[in-house]
Image 1 (cartoon, one colour):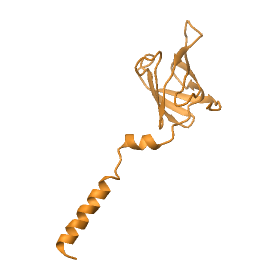
Image 2 (cartoon, rainbow, N blue to C red; image 1 turned 45 degrees about the horizontal axis):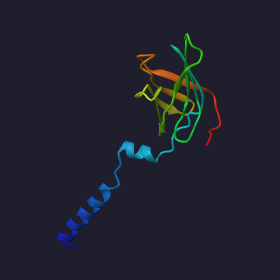
Image 3 (tube, rainbow, N blue to C red; image 1 turned 90 degrees about the vertical axis):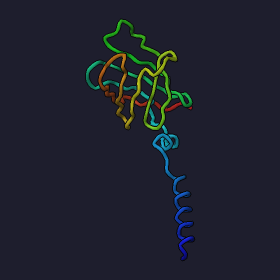
Image 4 (cartoon, rainbow, N blue to C red; image 1 turned 135 degrees about the horizontal axis):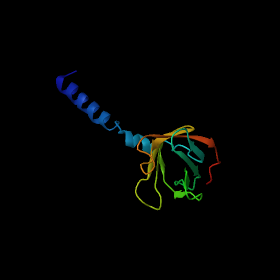
Length: 129
C-alpha cells in the first residue's frame, strides 16, 4: 500500500470515528427516563414525603415536609431525564434535583436541607398515560 493510500485511510478512519463519540448529555437523551411514580419518604434527617404520578413527560405531585403548619403539601412538577428528576414549585426555577436509582432517590432540596437528602420509594403507583 502506498504512503498516500495509508494516510488517506487513516484520515477517513479518524473522520468516521469522530462522529461516533457522544457526550454524557447526548447519551441521556436516548436513555429511558427513570420511573418516579409513587410515594417516596426520607430515610433520615428532615421528614420529607413526595407523592408523584406521571402525566406524559411531566411528573406532578406534592411534597410534604414535617413538622409543617400545613398538611396540604406543596405542589411540585418536573421532568425526568435519564435518572435525574428536576422539580420546581409554581413554575419557579429548580427547587430540587434528585438522582433516581430504582427505589432510591438522592439529591438536594436546598430550601429544606444543605446536605444530601435520601428518599426511598415506599409505595409504587401504576404510571398513567
